[in-house]
Length: 138
Image (cartoon, rainbow, N blue to C red; front, side, top):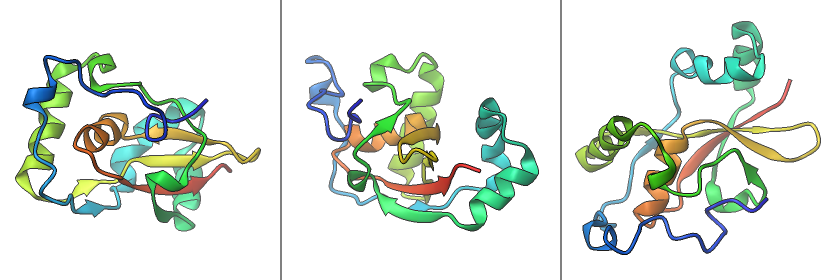
């Protein structure tokens, strides 16, 4: 499956295009706080101690380097928690650091979004190539 970063999917409907945020400001990406993101990783059966070990070898890359990203909604309109979308958009507009989405590189070489779907899609909707944190599957 091709990631939304590489696919021609439009992240805004026609009526939303005029409301698209300005891409003039470059987002300042920061690596996320491990404890706050473990809840997302626990959906994959990853214990807190395993999560900490996985994150020791984490690296930051541009999303455009990941060609086979899985588990990503196709657009912001697919995100069901609209309050979350608004909160994330405020973080982007504030100019403070935005936590990088976390991608797990599977043992078979594929990549799966573990945390940060809304942040990933918001960056894409802003016309940005988001920075992401990549960890390896235990």
